[in-house]
Length: 307
Image (tube, helix red, strand yellow):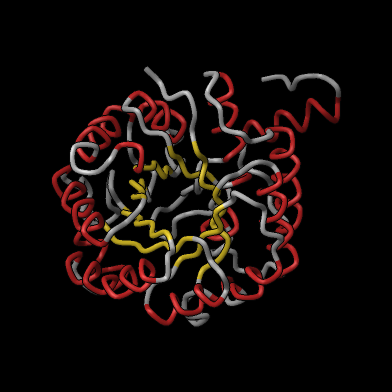
């Protein structure tokens, strides 16, 4: 039986925008976060406290967090790779910090120049400090369904990293298909396996749509009882490790799926479509959301678009 209710973690303001080459103004970022929260998104990944040298787009994280209007009940998250980033996130009144690791040894070495075990060890003081400060901790596991360097990633490797994240005290753990190669069958197998070592209701699916499989993978995860999913308005974002990657699954497309299944999300799809149009215009790129484009065309022309 499918879940009756699902939480969407909106990652557009951070994961979606971080690779944009042209700097997106702080005002636009603040407006984006506010609009998303007002549309009913319960958790908005709003900033990243990393070195501006590595991710210049996220250099204004503190200003973004200071500028947003905090909506009661909304969780505002930020990526924190180290204690320095955590301290900045704490000062910015972040509700949830996000730490990350990979299920692929090859990806871990290429991406952050250390082993999986070493990467988790680096996060121990960050997770400890967050818990002491009363903050939520979310762990994200990249390449859980495939790696651009080693190819297949054994399910046992994903389970191992989940257990390591659990030991750090993570409140939620993201199973991420970083390059979008996952398929529905493999997704079910992975979700079933990790559900045996970590509470199912605290697991989330983070799917990229490189091969057009993200919505199918979300449905497969729903069949395994997963109740939390990540999505990015207008399909913002992409993976620099996968040529032709179309980025995160679009939030509009996910909400359309869930609405059709009668699953409650609390998210207003009409508002979401307008937000997707707003941010797409702001960065000068077309929306990657099929649902967003279709509903905008219908609204403007008064008829459904032909296919």
